[in-house]
Each structure stands twice: as C-alpha cells, then as structure tokens.
Length: 125
Image: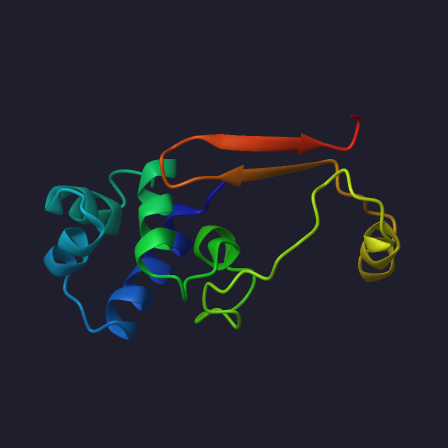
C-alpha cells in the first residue's frame, strides 16, 4: 500500500524538479487541477490512472520510486527500455535473477499499455 504522506513528498519533489506549479502539472498529465490539490492535501490517494499518466508524461520518473520511494529519481534509464526476450524464451535470465535476489523468484510480470490494456505473464504457465 502506498504511504500517502511519503507519496505527497515525492509528488512535491516532482513539481520542484520540473519547476511546475500544481496547475501546470495537472495540465501536463491531463487531469483536473482539483485532483492534484486533493492529492497534495492528503484528501485523496493516487489512482492507478493518475500514476500511469505521470509515468507516461515524465519518463524520468521511476514507477517504484513514485509509489514507494525505492529506486532513483530521475531514473537512471530515463524511460529507455532495453529489448527483452519473450517470456517463453529459454535463457539463463532465471539464474541471473536468483543471483541478484537469493531466495526470491519472479511469480508474475504485468505490462501496462498506454491504451489501458495489459498483459500478465505467470511463471506457472
């Protein structure tokens, strides 16, 4: 679950980084200005749609940093995605993942598209 007060701090950090006021930020990501006001005041929590709009319009924003403060901002990859093989492709990626995160395995990967659709890949398949 997203900690609202920490999320507000990160959102304020975005506004300062891009030198935008709340109204200009709302216009940039195409949400109502009141939505930003309600988020910054702590009245509302961010919706998935809001988060996706921020990520889409500001590729330097790391999703995990925005949601829970983990990772970096601005993102080291700056929105550049390196090509990866199809999930069914056989490779030694599993071994690399196990080395980086001993005792942890990837169970599911979900890809969200800009049109609102998504694809989920489960390890059980």
